[in-house]
Image (cartoon, rainbow, N blue to C red):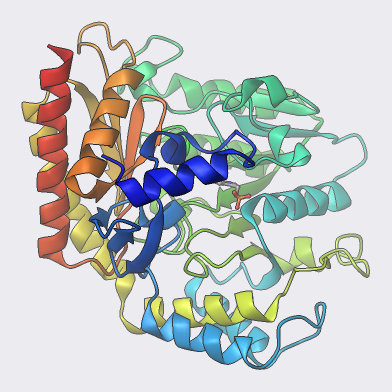
Length: 433
Ligand SMILES: Cc1ncc(COP(=O)(O)O)c(C=O)c1O
């Protein structure tokens, strides 16, 4: 239950605040006052284990002391001098060069994921051969809410979607296969159909994709999906633009999720886990694309908040910790535990149609029954609310709950969070009876 101080504040605010908040905050109705590590505190003093890591941003947990120190020091010194170099920017570039695949050696910095996606689209169009004026994307992909990014998104807030110049291919959503096939007997037909698009339409300049589709419910491709698609892009001169705003920075156990699938992209977008929740994003790319004379024209990567010194300080401090504390190995280790516990929950709770994920990013898909697989958003909502009441925060989107714990969470706290999830599932099942 939302406590009295929070209810009063939400009431006051609602007199002026425009509607349209996320499903998460609209259903959750909480006012958080503090975050430390994996624990949040609300205005009435209740505590929550945050298995959604802010907006899947807090890879190091809330208020990591080293990131707070770096930001505080920077905040006392310098906030904005447009995109002039700062002492930290060169160091951040070197850190990215050490963490990313070798060929992704050139970087531009922005404030939000959507802004980095827009910059990627501009770069693609700058280097595209004449006549290549369409962008490929995947159904169920999510790339942000700016107009260019929305051109690639055909779901979410549907009435605002516009097709623009995009061509959509099938995503590897095996649990709800649009072709009504089963893996592996399907021969990954979804990928062959994307491949056919790529091969037969000579006007596609790039494929923009999430290696693991995050917002649509953590859709993890089966083996063979990316190999087929990436090869056909390479053979046909179509650039690979991996949108790793959500998965990048280590969330799946490798710095880029694409590394798990052998994808070698031309451009990559990064944001959420990059700067511990401070608004910051990066576009990383091969020098052939980002240093191309057309891409690199004066002003092409500049904007008021791009290269902001505060964001750079937060990103540098975050990545230093990720690297020094070998957190990618920790993600793999804790991810195995998470996967094991979720498999146990799946075995016990019939409302869970499927649980799936990689590393510390998992999705729980709720169904009315396992035979019809009819989506059950009402059950997802009930679990989400009960979890909050029990002191656990998850992320909700339609009939899927997502779990993305901080990389730094203690094992016992993760186990405790999953035990609360188990109780929330029991309560929601009782409600549905
Ligand atoms: C894969 C992906 N791309 C882009 C975005 C947009 O990022 P932002 O909300 O920072 O604009 C998101 C946001 O969730 C995302 O998940």
